[in-house]
Length: 153
Image (cartoon, rainbow, N blue to C red; front, side, top):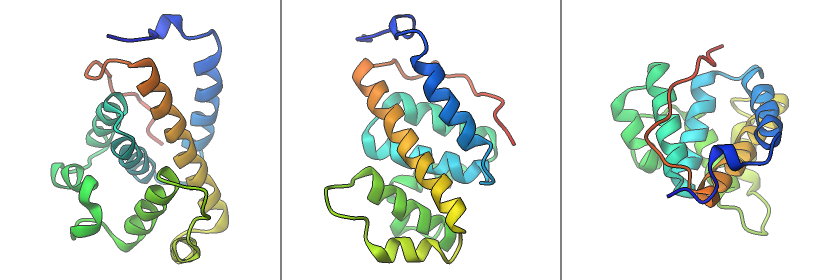
């Protein structure tokens, strides 16, 4: 049972979050990579609503079942490119951050594949999905009813 339903969320709260979401979605970053980040963070945070949402979004834009099932163990499979592995490792570090700084080698590895501007957008995307997952878990939104959007670039 939901603790706070969609209709009980304070007016404007989701509008604020969606403005950041739209900003990230309009960044010069591949949508499949953004959704992969969102899906991974949702898995790490144990947010069933967000896992449902982002698995459906990934399927909609052509992600394979094999890769979807392997995201939880990405670092022990051959299914992800070095570029994807670099951002998945960064996603893991930011999502499971402690008070320690993000390891320098993770950031340096990103610079092999992304510009500093792209890394900034990717970091915001990771921070944003972590905000969403914490809200959805706190409110206990029910998974399973999400319908795929038309956010394709």
